[in-house]
Image 1 (tube, helix red, strand yellow):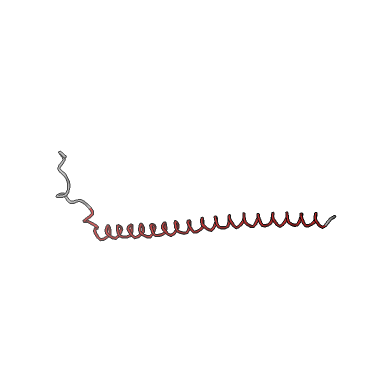
Image 2: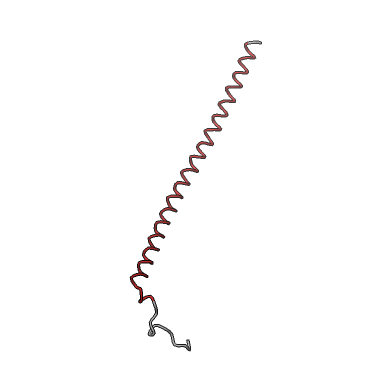
Length: 82
């Protein structure tokens, strides 16, 4: 086996390894961007969830405090002809 052949083979292997590393770095960057986007979306959804839970608690409290006020009185009801 000649030195030139061995050198060429090593150069090819090194080039192939460099190419694979570049490809893997690209995909790691892509995955990192996806994780960042998912984290932002998750944060927004958690905030929306918190706001919705607070709104439900407020409505439940209003219903409990209102008790009888939530039931329409005879004065609030429409006459039958409506």
